[in-house]
Length: 84
Image (cartoon, rainbow, N blue to C red; front, side, top):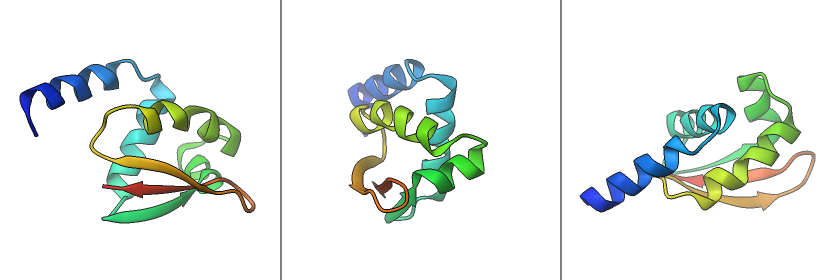
């Protein structure tokens, strides 16, 4: 990763809220090459509601981090496709 990318990523990360940082760390820790996560399961692990997870995911999805997040499905809870 270039120094510019590292600086940009670090700067983006500092603008995340505490909840967003917790979600990002959870995804980094639990994502393999490509993994699917349901908002309700992330919320259960982090003591948040599925709605809180869904509300905070766009900041991670739109930020420049070492993972890619894509909204994938809506059955019984939003599913997120995470690629490390």
